[in-house]
Image (cartoon, rainbow, N blue to C red; front, side, top):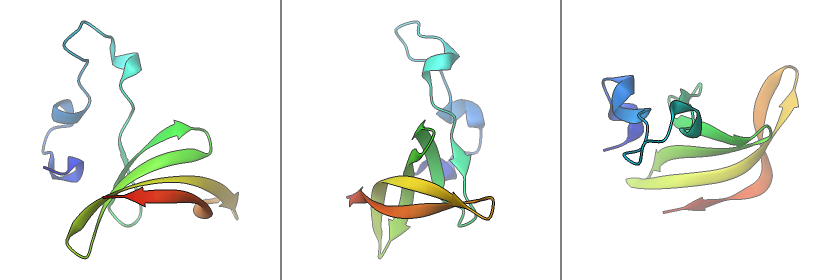
Length: 79
């Protein structure tokens, strides 16, 4: 199940079963294309998207232009 299919945010952002706290769980967001993503650093993010029937994990650097976050060339998409 894709993260964007979750009906309750608690299905996604829950502490791990080893007693970890909620600070260790990344916050999931949704971009303008309705794709789920989370930041792994201030300028890098992992986006979960669907393309031609395949689920992709896109790990990419982003840059800011005109106050908008845009994907850069540095990155990789994994199936």
